[in-house]
Image (cartoon, rainbow, N blue to C red; front, side, top):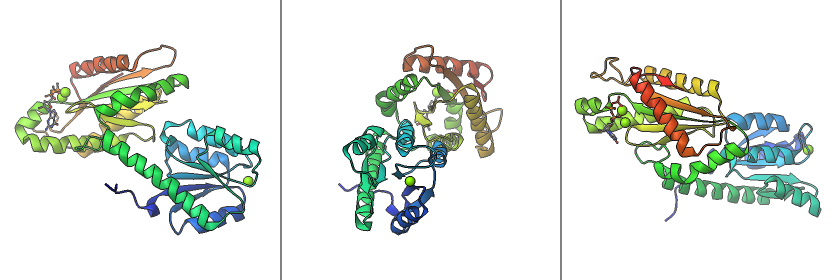
Length: 303
Ligand code: GH3
Ligand code: MG
Ligand code: MG
Ligand code: MG
């Protein structure tokens, strides 16, 4: 069965080269088929990748600030870029240079001088493979009502994300959310409208997390987990405040709640790498914090 994939013209390629002529040549060849964003230095592309994703990165090895190999390593360290192909554009072909590219995490390299048709075909092949992989992940790991990640994803994949954070000696935070008085909501508005409400909450959660590696999971019927790798206490607090703010502006009517609108309670836990814990323990701690938030009167967060 063929998979319906995103249009290639909507796929974003980051072109990183300090040589303006090469950059313009690459842009001119590629922009007929894809969306192209040019960068002239390593730092600027690293900065961009902190807040954004891409479908492919074309990278020069010799850059004025950070070496391209180093840029590649840093990008590949980020889980959000695990499946993003990085293709080096290089004029040095000796064995050591080639090995250095592979070791840095390169998907491929294209030699200078560049042949337009090879550039387009290689790029297209890599992007299509990436899109197919993403589609299969989506079909396996996403909840059909909300489009959020499902429990299956949590069980199979999340421990890897968690272990990666431990290896990197970085913080890892987790939020557990539960809709307030949702039984009453279903009783008053009916189960189908309850489903609509769950979808709206999912949209609010997606809007409230900003980083590509943040993940929202539909954990149970009206319960959600938000995984925030590399996020410390202040970051978690900001996310909780954003969720409450976004949900308040969404203003979903709930006549059976004293607020007159739908709210959520949030329990959060900030893991710092010193204390080795299993992911399940983190979930239990978030669950306890959620219980506290419910007892504190709902529509609040406890960390
Ligand atoms: P509390 O504020 O203490 O959380 O009260 P509550 O009524 O929300 O209690 P609880 O969290 O236990 O409620 C879960 C309810 O959510 C029960 C069930 O009817 C409803 N629910 C669970 N999954 C779904 C779903 O997929 N669709 C709809 N419409 N309702 C669901
Ligand atoms: Mg260069
Ligand atoms: Mg519940
Ligand atoms: Mg509830």
